Image 1: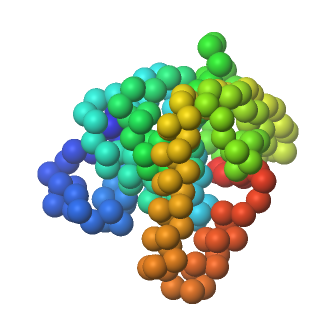
Image 2: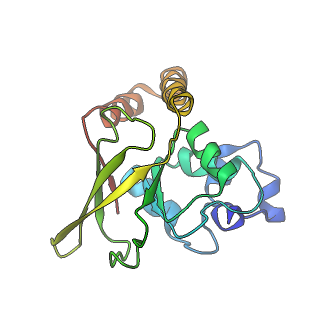
Length: 193
C-alpha cells in the first residue's frame, strides 16, 4: 500500500514539503535498507506484487521514490490512481504478464535488471523485455507490459522528464549535473540491485 511505500507516520508528516527528508522514509518499515541501496546505485526500480499503490492516493508515495532515482515499478497489477501518480512523477509502471511475478521468476533482490526499450521511445501498452542478471551471473528474461496506457499519458511522462531536466539544470552543482546528464543518455536503461 502507499503506507508501505511512504508511511503516514506522525514523525514523517512534519516533512511533507521537504522531499529529500521524506524520501529517507521510503519503505522504512518493510525494507529498511532500500533508501541506502537506491542512493548507492543511483536509483533503480521497484518490483512488487498485486495492486501496487493501493490505499490513499498520496502523491508523495510516487514522488519520494522518484526523488531517490527510481525509474520504473514492475508489478503484477497497479492501483489506478497510484499508476497515474507514478506516470506524473516520471516513473514508468510496468506489469508482469498474467501468471508471472517476482516469485515465479525467483527474484531475490540482488539482481541487475535491464529494461529494453525504456529509453528508446515508449508507446502505450507496449510489451518490453526485461533482462535479469543474477548475482551468480546466470540470466533470464521476462516480458512486461508498459502501463502507460494512452498517448496523453506518454505526453505527461515526457513532460515530467523535461521538467526534471530543467530542475537539475537550475539547482544541481556542476559536477553532479554532469553525472546525472550522463545517466540520462543511452538507448537502454540498466537499473537495478
